[in-house]
Image 1 (spheres, helix red, strand yellow):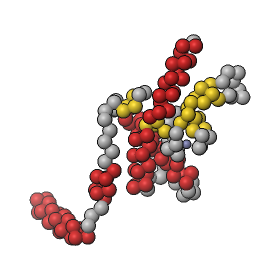
Image 2 (cartoon, rainbow, N blue to C red; image 1 turned 45 degrees about the vertical axis):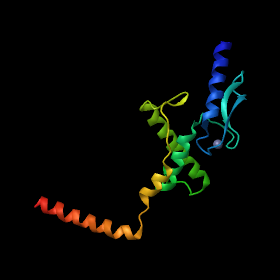
Image 3 (cartoon, protein in one colour; image 1 turned 90 degrees about the horizontal axis):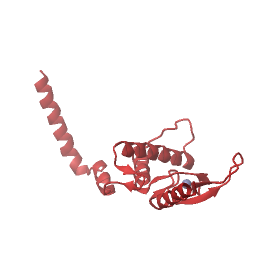
Length: 154
Ligand SMILES: [Zn+2]
């Protein structure tokens, strides 16, 4: 029992190193937490900034969730006021979903990513930015394509 418990603590310690809070992106710490309803203290990962027990996600997942929420105005909570708290809840929501998906695809495990991660933040920006001079030729190209495809349909 004691060995099992210390293994769990070691697992949480290493998790605290490569994971961060889903809400604020802050550091996680291994803390002993005393519950009113339970006799023994429990060891959990904890976010000091949010003051809550937080198992966390990989830092890269948090960063990509944050970037995605901001770039796409992702909002899972339409009934809430638009403020910092809602932003954090949306990042946490998307972090959870991304975490779920990466686990489902077998790309992350308890020790983090199983494959090397290459953040392509710059590439993402380029995808959504079109120069004015490029826009005209892109639109021209698109209208040509439309004409061609409608010809084919007839
Ligand atoms: Zn936090």
